[in-house]
Image (cartoon, rainbow, N blue to C red; front, side, top):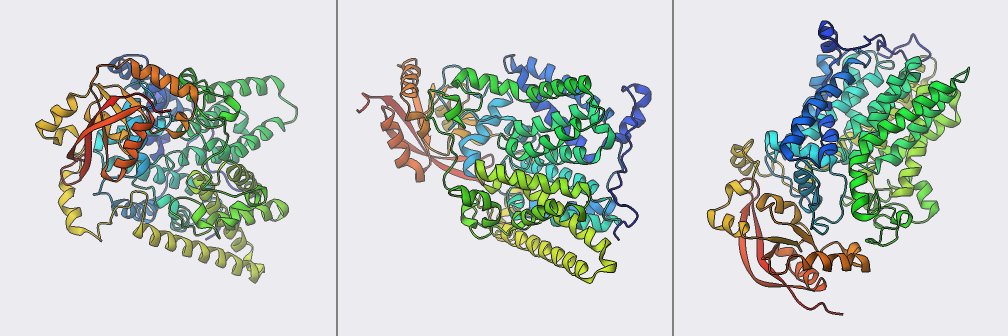
Length: 618
C-alpha cells in the first residue's frame, strides 16, 4: 500500500544522539550499526592507509587499523538512528542479486582493465605508493588506487574469485538506502523490496557485480549523501551533517574521479539549502564551509599530492589541457568512442543513448532507464507543484548531473549513480500517482505503465547478464562441470606464485627489471616478482611527449647491465614487440610458459623473454 497521510515525506529517522560515544552507550551504539556500516569500515581503512604510504608497510598498518576503527566508531555513534530493513528485504533483494553474483563466481575475472592496471594498483596500494622510485609508468596512468585497495583487501580475505563479493555487498548496501528512500511512499515492506530490485536490476550494474571494476563501490556513498541532503530536515544545517556529507562525497570522488561531475548538482543543492536559512547564519556557515572543504580534501590529498609531485598534475592524465604536465599531451578530452558528438548530441545524450547503445560502452546494450527518467525529471522541474520537494530535488540532480556526465564523457559505466537515481525517481513518481489515482484513472494507468516498463527493463537486464559481462566468462549453467571442478579452489586462490613450478618460480626470481610491453600483463607482475622495478612502454599518450621520452631514457640508463624481462600474451605479442622497438628496446628469444591464474584450472599462456637496449630509431 501507498502511504496516504502525508503531503511531504515522513522521516522516520531519530536525530537525537549522544554527544559522545562511551562504554555506557554501547547498546545505543550497536542499535545504530546497520548493514552498510559493517562494510564502511573497510572504506575507512583504505582512505586512511594512503596517509601512511611513506611508512614501512607493517608500521603503516599498525597505525591505519586503529585509526580506521576510531573514525568508524565516531561516524556510527554520531549518526541518526533508523529502523533496519525487514526480513522480506533480504529475501526479495539479496537473493536475486546473490544469484546473479553466483552466476559466474567460480570463474576468475580476466577483464582488460583488471589485468592492465587494477590488480597492479591494488597490490601496490596496500603496501605503499603504487609506483616505486626508479620506475616509469608501469600502468597506463597512475589512477587513484582507492577502489583497487578495497577490492584487494577482500581478495586477500576470500581469494581472487570471491574477492569480488565486495561489489555484491556494496549493491546490498545501496539497496538498504533505497529502501529508506521509499518508506514515505510505499507502506508495505515487501513492496518496497520489490521496488528496490527493480531499481538495481539494470544491465550495466549487473555486468559488474562480480568483477574487479570500481564503479559500484561508490554507489552507496553517493546515495547515502543524497539521502542525507534530501531527508535530514533541520539537522542538515549542523556541522555534524555537513561533515558526514563531505566525507561521503569526498570518498566517492576518491573511488572514481568522474563521480565529481555526477555529485556536483547534489553539492550545489546542499549549499543552496544551507545559505537559504533566515536569518542568515554567517559565522556557522563559514565554519561549515571550511570544515567541509577540509574533510573533502583529506580524502583526496594523499594521492593527489603524490601524483602531482610525480607528473606536475594532481589529476594526471585527465584535463591536461588545464594542468599542462609535460609528460602527457595537452588534451581535456576523454575516449572519443563514447558519448555525443557536438553540443546538440551532448545536450540530448541521456535520451539518445537509448537509440545509440553501441556508443554507451564496450558492451553496447542499453534498456533506457536514464532516458525515460531524464524526460520525467524535466517534467518534475517544470511542473513543480504536482510533486513533492524531494521528487523535484531528485529530478534536479538527474537533469544537471546528466548534463555534466554527457559533457565529460557520456560513458554509461561512469553514470551508474544516475541509473540508480533514475529508477528511484520512476518508482517515487509512480507511487505518488497511485496515491492520487483514486480520483483519476489516467494516473493509475500511468503508474501501471511506469511499473511495467521497469519490470521489462529489469527482465531485459537479467537476459543481458546471462549472455555477457565485462570478462566474457561463461555461466555455471553453460559450463556446469567446469564450475564444479574449479569450485574446490575457492578461498584458496590468493596467490599465483604458490601454484608455479619451481623452475618457473626461479625464472621469475631472476628478473631484475620488468618491462611492460603487453597490454594485459602489468597486473600479473606483482604476483610473479614484485622486487624488480617496472618500466612501461605501452602508454601511447605518454610516449608522444618529448619530456616523457627523456625521462624514460634517464630511467632506462639506471638499469644498464641489469637483466630485463617482459611477458606478453600470444594475442598481443606483435604489438608488444612493436612497443619495445619504438622505445629503443628489443626482445630476445622467447619461452612459452603456462602460468596458473590464481588456481591450477585457470591457466594463462604467456611468452617470457629478455629485453635489451639498442640504438633508438629516428
